[in-house]
Every structure is written in structure tokens, then in C-alpha cells.
Image (cartoon, rainbow, N blue to C red; front, side, top):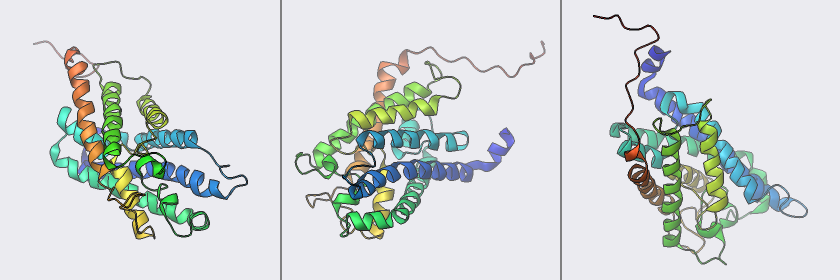
Length: 281
């Protein structure tokens, strides 16, 4: 098995990141399409889910995406995770850009599939392909709600804080020197983290907390009829917020974990060479 993993190399890692992120977005953008577009057409409106069902589906998407990719690539599925792991955990910097491209490509392809599958519902619910259904694919300040006066910098603050929480908890959950979940439950627990962030931090900016998750689907929507995909409901350029905010937040979260917890944990002992004791000299 280890020989096969070694032979797969970077190509196998990127393939896993692509597939895992694609699964994440198929569930994530898919549930928003069902709730927003499909739900707008029920009688009464809103009959196909709500914010909680969106949070749960995004969390399940993370869990399932991690199970798909973890053995080959570590299942980052998020450039903010990749950059934080390179900064604090020794992940090779030479792989950061290829991982981010693979993650973004997986998100882009998944969003195209969601766009295709929900063609009729999106066209009926929002014939002009406006901000009303843009949130199926990418985030907006206050989820497009003009009654809540959140703009670019308020959303940027939100993304830094939300992604800092995400990375602090990912590092805690996956740190073998801490108390990691047993029985291969790590992906499930990380999925619950995303559910919690969605339920507690979803108002101001839609909890993208992942540059690939936002940019890939945003590009897919732009190429398929959403001409204002790069802007928010106020007409301001917004696409940079869910890219830069999570990248900064990931570094903040990694630094917080290292400062408050990681540096106090005991040093790990080298793993034994195997079950058979080494011969004595």
C-alpha cells in the first residue's frame, strides 16, 4: 500500500484534492440551490429547507469530501487550510499553489454540475439570474440582505474570524499530540465544526471560510449567465473578500492554536520500527 501511495505522487494528491472538493461543493451548492431556487417555487415558499439544512449539508459535504481525499492528500479541500499547514505544520510550500488550483478546479466543476442540474429551477425562480440566486454559488455580504448593513470590510472581518475558528479547531482535532478523535472519526468531527460555524457565523458573509469554495463556483456562475457575479448587491467588487479573508483567518487561527496549545504539548516520541523488536547489538 505504501508503495502504491508513493507512486501516485503529486498527481494522485491533486486528483484527490479535486475529487474531495468537488464532493464538498456538490453537497454545499446543491443544498443552497434546493433551498433558494427550489424552495422559492413551493406553496407556500420555503418548503425545501432553511438555514439549518444548509448548514448540515455543508458539514456533511466536508465530512464526505475528507473521507474521499484524506488517504492520498490529507484532504485539505481549502487553500486556507493548505497555507496554514505550510506555515505551521511543515507542508511543502511547493505544493501550495498546485493544491489550491486543484481545489478550485474541483469546486468549479461541481458548481457547473449544480448549475446544470438546477437549470429549470434557477430560471423559473430568478429569470434575470440576479443576486437572488447568486448566493446558490458564491457568498454575499449579509447573504444579499440589504436590511443588514454589512459591506466589504464587515464581511472581511467576519471571514477572518470564522476561518480562524475553523483552523484552530482543525489543528486541535488533527494534532496527534493532543487528543485526536479515534476510530477514524476526525472527518466527522471536522464536518460538525463546519455545521457549527454555519449556524453561529453565517449571517454577515455566508461563511465561505474557503477561497476555492467561493471563487470556483463564482466563476462557474459568471460563465453561465450571472453577469454581476464579481460584485455584491450594492454593486461593489466583492469577490476578493472570501479569498483574502479566509487566507488571513487561517493564519490567525493557526497562530492562536500554536501559541495557546501547541507549544505546551509534550514532544512526540519516534514511532517504533514495527511489531518485531529490532535485534540487539
